[in-house]
Length: 146
Image 1 (tube, rainbow, N blue to C red):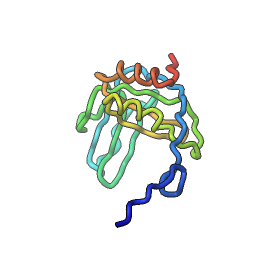
Image 2 (cartoon, one colour):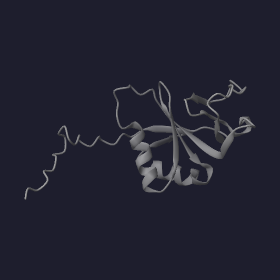
Image 3 (cartoon, rainbow, N blue to C red):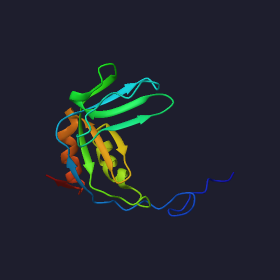
């Protein structure tokens, strides 16, 4: 009988573990809603002066992340969420940005919702986990900006 061959770390079969990134992040004010509408729904009117709003349309849904007070009334929404902004911009070649944030949160059992933009990433956590998330990220070596 032959035994399975283990891949060496750093080989094509198993890439080397990325070094942990120490990131800066801030908490956006207010609470957020994560909403779902049918894929063919018209875009709701949202304020364009907020610090963060995300609209994504796929063949399956229209997904909106917006301040809680702007949640579309016809949408299925999860509220309230806290939004953490990772201070970018991050080059597209940089790997491990989200992993550096979500791995410590996952170890603490903090569920997340992540959104990426051209320059940076946003990680939302349910409001009930906000303090735990903040403490966890700081303990992991990330810098909280006020």
